[in-house]
Image (cartoon, rainbow over all chains, first blue to last red; front, top):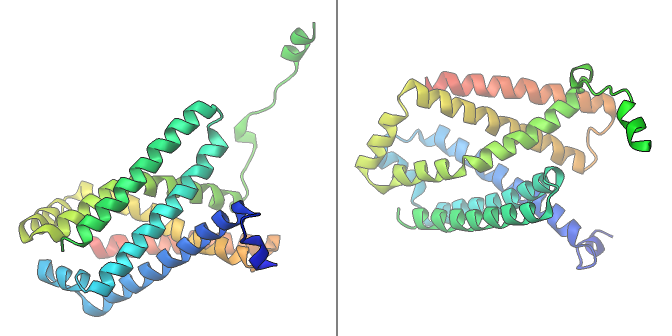
Length: 115
Length: 128
């Protein structure tokens, strides 16, 4: 039943699940981040770099940003669908948001691998 | 003249006579806070960039965030974040059919509001 809902027959279900799944990834990341801050108590620039620079943490952080972009894309899409009734305007705004989110994701990658 | 008749219909759409139930307040705030977080994403990325670029940019960012206006702004952002976080967890719980009765949904809505206030207060206390 669940597997069938995730096939191409029900594309909306996959988007629905993607929004939930990305939310869980971000929640787990943020809880771990908060715990790391509490445990390590980083001091100053060096402490902050030490916290952020391990490769696995950068990968996890990139995963967080990928989830964030996915989640924001779906969320903003729903908001536009509910409140913007002019289809042309909605399409233009949606493209704008899509482009912005892709730029944000690229920017996040550049920041993370410049550490 | 159906047009004239339609225009003469009494209208009663004074929004102030409609009180949103607590569940609906939580829900619309979840949506609003989500939009706020989306709109402030570039600011967050900029701050992340400043914090890791160099010791000088880190110090400049830290100095900027010492200003009371900046702190107020960050606390405002934390309101949106904490609400979106807790209300999102509530929605996830409901997606797996947990706490879905009206009574329980009201209780969990109030719990989300309480956690919002406590978390923002704790956060504000820590950064001030």
